[in-house]
Length: 399
Image: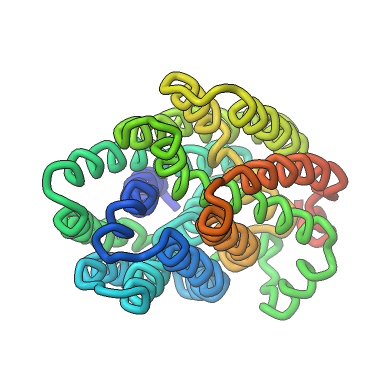
């Protein structure tokens, strides 16, 4: 692939993930307005968002397989349209079922083809192994840039026009994604490094019998739990503590801004140090940050400091985890295999989104979920250490 095509794929990937993840990360600021307007509990709205995350994860391996097999452009184009339609139809929701069908199912299906597994798969195929971790970090940072732009803009629109008008604007913004998908026209199915075609069955057997693959699944589950719970429930948590809605929106925007730096930094670190050790350190620092946040007084400034620190750690897991998948198993079925790992992430997201609302409705507090988040961070710190991160024998033989 020419350098021009590689740059085109990288730029379109950054912009595509910026829009898809930027819009997705705004949903937390709509939790209270939607519950009040539709007369629902936080648990019900949280369940719709949890279903979105779960469906996104369930279909991700299949979407990834088709992207690996036939190229990513068509998948991205259709998914971008579904995303936009789902956002638009959400404005017509009038009860829990319609909210689950629109914001839950349609948006969840749309997300599966315009976010990390498919986009990173295309980028991973385009760049060399030496530059892969950094390239994946740059694209991941795009998602955080979108969060930095869309969250404050969404809060400003929400404050002046209401949640329905804001969703219409986001639906129109999402229509840019099918256009950006055209930039991936040169993305072609990958071949194994030694030009020997590997079957789908062989790829799945390799992953199934590799202990590191399951440890990566467990670690990414924890990441999903953290980011979904915080992105969806942090604004409401801060409001419950007496802070303003703008503080919650600013906190989410800071998470996005600092993760631009964090994603790039962890992508860079993953290219220079063993990625499994960088992941362990990342989760260990998360455990410390979460502990300090809940045990110190909650103020406007402590919330922003937490958001900035957590933001630096936010999606730094993505270039590291995806980089390990590509390093160990190669790139031929990268989008599918990372899609399976991402499914674990989304199971964690489902539980983080839903349990946050459920526990709040049952206890009037998020304390149990904060403590669980700390425990999960400690577990994830440990599980990455024994991962066998050497490339498989068939890949080493091709070098």
